[in-house]
Image 1: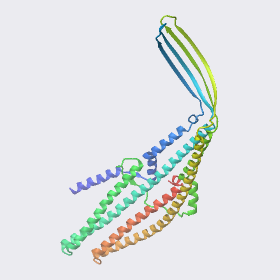
Image 2 (image 1 turned 60 degrees about the vertical axis):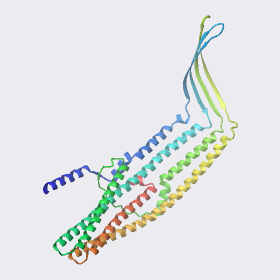
Image 3 (image 1 turned 180 degrees about the vertical axis):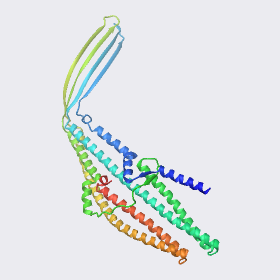
Image 4 (image 1 turned 90 degrees about the horizontal axis):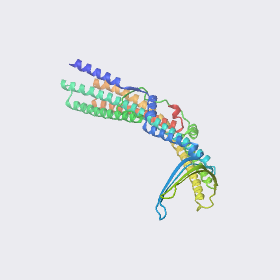
Length: 428
């Protein structure tokens, strides 16, 4: 019976492993950039900006219309009732020849808006890459936390089994057995809780990737990052030159300048051309007199000039408001630059601190691991009691978990610095 159970367990594990997909960080980013819902929305907005960016939308081309009117009358009078029908088809063309250079200005503004939309897409892609990187490594961290809890649970279980054997043989009392059982149950509860945390981290990663939440993976990247020797001055130069949030602010300033140019164009005269051909068919049917049926057509070409003299200073106010909005845009750019500089300095200092903390965590983990091995041997030999051995177990567990947290924190700081300096697209 045990052989059958073992065979079923082996087959179940084989099926589970075959259902899992191998996933590297590079593959995760590729999937996320293709399927993430937020990025799909941003890309659709970019398409709208491209569709708006045409000379026709800016007003460069004439408007051609076909019009048709039919007027029908039935007249009742004392002399002679009649019916009258007038048909007037026409083809009309209207074209604004000059309106203060606003056509060119609108087209330039559409160019800027299209570039701004592409910049927004780049910022969204950068943000998504950063989120995927952190979600991927967070999942690896929770997976390794699960391994640590599993190993501690195994140690507690071995200790509990040994205490049960010793209690049955009468070499130890029930007090040590209860202590071992409590430690085992506590470690098992921690392991089960960590299992849920790991499963949720996988679900969060799947959501960012835009795939089914039940998808399982075999992660192929190591949970570690290379250490970099950054210089704050170099990071600052890169940020000011390459940060895409800052580039978007500069583009928004350009859009505000176009609004000032459009407001100025209202002070120029407007020259328009209207031309077309119109046909007329007149039909009158009196009840007594002979009917009248005439047809005619005419061509027209009209040139008009309009110059606004006064409209309650509305155009002047619009120009003043546009200038104020440009000043607001410049202030917002300066504020963003100052904010980014401040955040960069904080992240740089935090990165340097976290490098030192990781080194300390590595040393602490190695020391507690060695202490655990020695304490296990001493406990089995009876040189130390269960209280001391349990304290060593907890110290090793805490040191191992602290090391994993230190690695993740370092990855987080490094990723943030790379993104702020505009290098995340080239790095990943």
